[in-house]
Amino acid sequence: MKIAPLVCFVKILHHWLWPPKLQQTLTLLTMAVGALTLAATFFIGEGALNSLWKDLDRLMGNRIDVYPDVGPNDIMLKKRPSADLTNDDLEYIKARIPWAKYIVPMFFDRARVRSHSNSMIMPIEGIVPELTKDVLYLPVTGRSFSTPGQKGVIMECLATESAAKTLQIDLVDSPYIMIRQERFKVVGIVPDPPDTGPRFSNRIILPYITAQVHFGTPGKIKVITVAWKDPKDMDRTVKALGEALDQCRAPGGYYLSSSTFRIKRGHDIVNKFMLYGTAQAFFAIFIASIGIISVMLANVVHRTREFAIRIAMGADHKELSLLILIESVLMGLLGAALGILLAIPVSPLLIGVLAERIPGTSQLEYLVNLKGIMFPLVVCGLCALFAGIIPSIRVKRMDILAAIRAE
Image 1 (cartoon, rainbow, N blue to C red):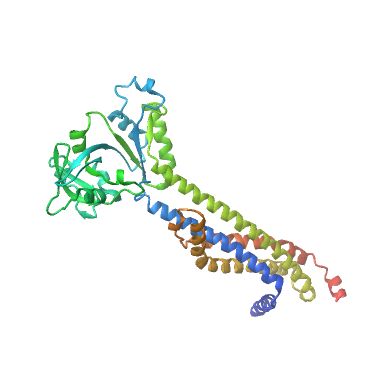
Image 2 (image 1 turned 90 degrees about the vertical axis):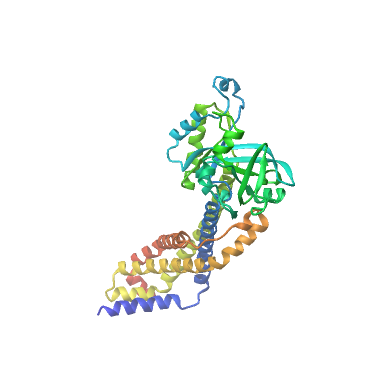
């Protein structure tokens, strides 16, 4: 006896699904288009964010550099022992941003660098041991600083690929260079900084202690570098950093590196893309939901005699109303599943179209993720469920005698 309702349910679904009705097909396709748009938006958007965060180290976007700048508040800065960044500033910032990955001093200057055959003025960087693990300072050839080199006991340095080529540095035969009057051994070659011209791609990296002792000023910090553990902390960290600098220096009395804000702009672009894509998807799903209401109302009218006979034989109005709701949800989920399957091959094509219209988007990657699968299913299913309420109410209020008399 328990099998009979199941067989009846299957036959009713077969009666609904099998006939190739144009209206049902169009509604299903509209729902699929909405789901496709929604899934592709999340696939591309999440993929872009994933690539963005994955490349933060390469893009120098996982940290922000603070430079001393007199700015419009030079009068306030004159009250300080020095208008430059100091160790007190560093300690104050550390106390205000305890969640940071690291807050460290960094040396930056320019000096004449000479090899056995070439000479030119190059940027000089001094980095603390924490920064030697950064992707930008991992040697592609040779090694990083030794422990004595990091302590300033011996004179070691790293050169970027451009600097090594310009100075014709050979790590085996001629690894020594002169920086001003000091002789250094080049122990490794690191990648060029991204998005920089020849003026800044040629650079020499030293241990911070060495750079500060030989080329810096006691008590004066050239740059303070602040990094965060989680990319989501970027906005919070930048805001707290600005507030701390306003207190320990003066409002506007500093300059923040622009690399972080370039990443932020990229993040904003991705968010806008996801917003517009989601809005278009919801519009298509809304149209499809109206189509489901129309289809299910027509389905109820078409099956009036069937429903009337079933009610006359003892079926409950609630059971038939539930059946209409299930059919509506199935239509929505079927359209969502079709849209999600189509979104997987369509997403790379959409990236190609974006690359032709928006510079810099050719590097976007799509990422098939759980959010891009579940969100369209949930949205389409809920919309179809609400769309089936009106037809189900009509079934619930059906007049059996009038329906049979009409037959």
